[in-house]
Structure formats: structure tokens, C-alpha cells
Amino acid sequence: MDFFQAMKDLRVGSWEEKYVDESVMDGTQWSVRIYFNHGMEVLAIEGSNDYPDNVEEFDRVFDLNVFGNMDSGVEGEFVE
Image 1: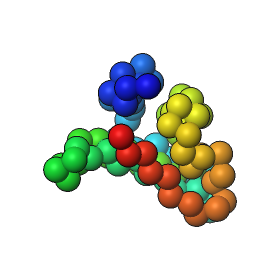
Image 2: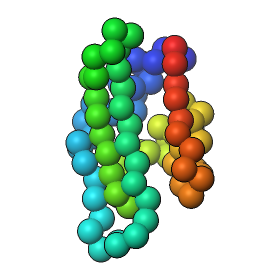
Image 3: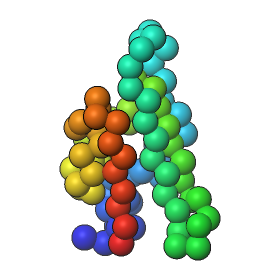
Image 4: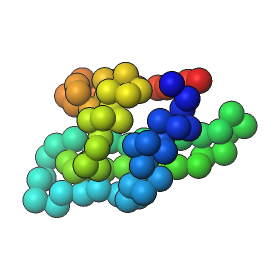
């Protein structure tokens, strides 16, 4: 799968910059950061107890197991 096509299909570019559920005081914080090879950050999205609608599909497409294992503290990385 082409990385950029997957990002387009998942509409990641239309995600909000921040997702926060303020009704939860203790929970899961997460972030997705995408960089070009030369280190320039092109996308930064973060959240606290709230997620984009298709975050499970994102997790599955890139096989990161980040959002499926919230309590582990594991960071996922996709490199193409």
C-alpha cells in the first residue's frame, strides 16, 4: 500500500489538530506526527481521551497497534 494514498483514503488531512474529552480526568493521551525524510513535520495531531472517527481504521491500515493497546505506553512507528 502506498503511504500517501492510504493517508488520503483515511482523510487524515481533514482531522482536527486536537481531540479532547474534557469530561475524563484521567485517561489516554496520544499523538500522531508525520515527518518527511528530511525531518520537516507535516502533520501533528494529538488527543486526550478522544479520537478521530476513523482512528481504528488508521491503526489497522498501518498495523501500529497503538490505539488497540492504549494502556501499554507503546509507541508505534511506520517507516516507508
